[in-house]
Length: 300
Image (cartoon, rainbow, N blue to C red; front, side, top):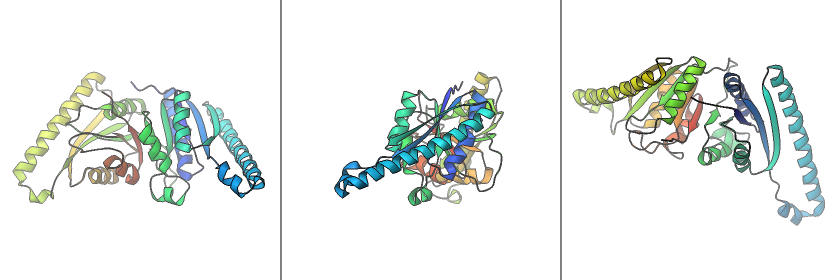
């Protein structure tokens, strides 16, 4: 059973970090959680400024104070809004290296869950997954929801949950987490196994391809039956074996067709979905998925 007492919402003012607050609110209402807001002002290199003159250094410090005041005002507005909705909210504005401070605060405050935007304010971050986001994903052991901004204003919800699952792996952390979310949000879970083909499906003998599909389909059915036995059929789960020449492409294409509200996945696997590690398949899914991604490090 998932337990989320405190949620860390990090913001840099980007559209996606604002969108992340909507998800933080959904989780906070469902799990009766407190939300902790955090903004990290990038440290000013005082040594470098000193080389340019003491006067410029003082001006930098003044600007830093002004920035902090502006963020305090913003957070106080969010606090008023969330308190009207019956949610507990506190906040911090710190200076330092963003990803280091995020991890530091998550440890100090004993948070259970981190919510942040997939991309940040900078041009590079807008083109790729934000560097701070990927660094937090690499270093933190907490479940992290990387939120993708939406073009249209729609109601934020978590009803359709997609779980890429490696039937040859012993780790089912993401699947168990997704099942708990499915029960909490009355959602439908789609479990997929990506059958990685070294060539295109039409190049395989049909009999061989059907046998491989059937083998993995049976393994998925057994896993789902095990979950239903444990959960008492309290959650809706469907499954499918799909083929792709690359695991991450299979996941992305399925997500584009089925339009899940969220993808829940481990940061790595070992076999069937080879090397699902940040920097390879998982990172590409996080970058290119059409929806928000909840990732976590697998545990036995």
